[in-house]
Amino acid sequence: MAMTKDDCSKVCRSDADAIIHVDCISHTYPDGTQGIHNMCFSVYQEEIVALCGPNGAGKSTLIEHLNGLMMPKVGRIRVFGKDVDKQNLSAIRRLVGVVFQDADSQLFSPTVLDDVMFGPLNLGLSTEEARERAMWALDVVGMEEITRIPHNLSGGQKRLVAIAGVLAMKPRILAVDEPTGDLDPSNSRKIELLLRSLKEELGMSVVIALHDMAVAARLADRICVVKKGGIIAEGAPQDVLYNEALLSTAGLDVPPVARIFKDLDLEAPPDERPLSLDQLMRFLRK
Ligand SMILES: Nc1ncnc2c1ncn2[C@@H]1O[C@H](COP(=O)(O)OP(=O)(O)O)[C@@H](O)[C@H]1O
Ligand SMILES: [Mg+2]
Image: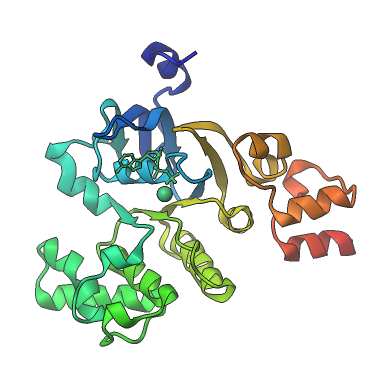
């Protein structure tokens, strides 16, 4: 049976520590398709939270609500205590930066530098300040080829420039939609390291949508499992990613590390379960 708004509010209590609080939102697209339904979701300070779910689960729809690109038909979203509504939109966009799944859709200027300066200029900074911000953001992502035409870059480079373009606005929260899906392992690794450094070195919070559970295992502090427009479970990666029944219900695979651990009949308390191959090797050597 579908949850009513009252049922939802019981689950989706106001959450004083959350810097983003998504309170029981629903979104129906113009053609009648329900993108998300009665969804509750929170983001906390300095964490990487992964939204894991198969294609069509509602990850992108949720992400586009986090900075007001989409508005919920029902329910509300608060960011640092501010309602995401038309009145607060520019303040919200300074706080939450969204990087789309398709990096091409985010890049349109003649050079990499112009592209990354676009956001800060739009915030009203002077050319000099915008250039400084852009150079800083390009340095953070490790992109040196600032005079290249964005259109001609490789997939991994485009992704880095798209992230730099959002970072240049110095958001407190970065939401990235499937950033590693189309990348080779080395570029994927680069993005993983970058996202981790945003949390560890800049104190940002990161929301990442993905269905590659190996990446989720290496990166996330917390996992939310998304299915059919709702979050059906959430918890520490050591719990969620070792729960084969749960992941299979959601149409997701157990990450390889957890599969090997299980196949070898290994056991450990949840907080000692390995989440990367390195951790697994260390566990096996003990
Ligand atoms: N522009 C749109 N118009 C109609 N339905 C859409 C649109 N975008 C997404 N949907 C639908 O909303 C649901 C959630 O999609 P989405 O948020 O893109 O999922 P995910 O990002 O997890 O793959 C799916 O059923 C999808 O078909
Ligand atoms: Mg998507």
